[in-house]
Length: 321
Image (cartoon, rainbow, N blue to C red; front, side):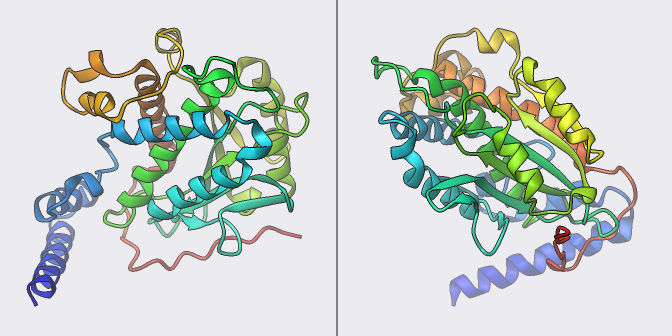
């Protein structure tokens, strides 16, 4: 009875906050976010979208998992990586990209990647989407003999960790706020079977999209190398889609190789001034996530007046056959 009373009181306060924000007019998102912040007991599980609080422990967990998963090569990591990424997207309240699953099929034993989406909250633009993607793994390269480092997959692991945390922030925040206005698709491309084709994941998605390509406004490619930007831009130009490449700052990328991360040491970065004690790989992933968030926030918010969508009524635009 006590739990039911608290749940009812909390729901009542959220409704009153929403009605109050609408009555005042303007600033609906900020007003609602403030109300939720003051009435919910667990603020860390409901991060405000416009000013997220990154969790170093989550970055450390992602980096440690990918480092361990790829120690025995790409083929042995397919199943555990698929289960892990799907579990993270499910916990972040992302909707499965296709047929109630996050895995994008390329072959029965070789997935194209993993994708989930967050529905937009602004009805006029909710059917428009922004695709945020990154490469997962290090192709067919073998890990380094030194197990104290993340090996060749360290860069991809950092990009994958950053994307998963941005997806977590947007997925959870969308359950309690009126953002994002446009829909967001988060995708991790699996290892390329052909090392010479570094864009195999994106090419495969464009051939078999989960969202109508004429409704995709932009692609935010996390960690896209400079040598592939012209080819990627030309590939997306065929569908009239803009490209934004996001990479970590050069000063951060040169701060040292990734290494096994202790959850205790990573937790120190949550407090102000704790970055000096935070491992370099966690710092790189967190700062990269912040850069992705800033670009994604600009791409999903329209800045115009909006009415909140009551419930999740978004119907995903089906691709043309």
